[in-house]
Length: 86
Image 1 (cartoon, rainbow, N blue to C red):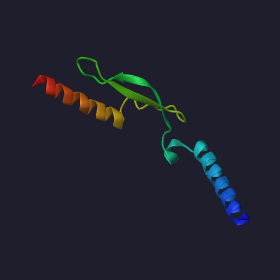
Image 2: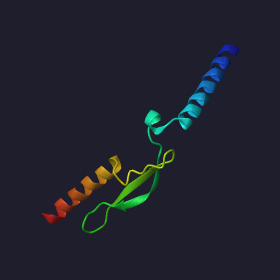
Image 3: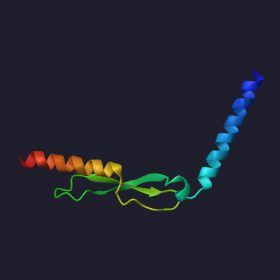
Image 4: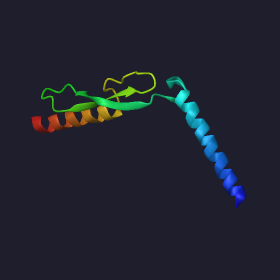
């Protein structure tokens, strides 16, 4: 039983070490750490749609609403317009 506890303690210590390394790593090494900071208009005529905008908490870079969720929103907007224009 003590052996299992020792293995668990060592594994948790290793995870903590990796988390500290990731927190100090550059975005090139581990990717951006995006945080939602607001939204922007999708560009449609009626201004109904909002695209999420994210900023990296590590380097301050911004995606300006160019992300996977924004692509989905634009596609849904276009689909709605296609149905209402018909």
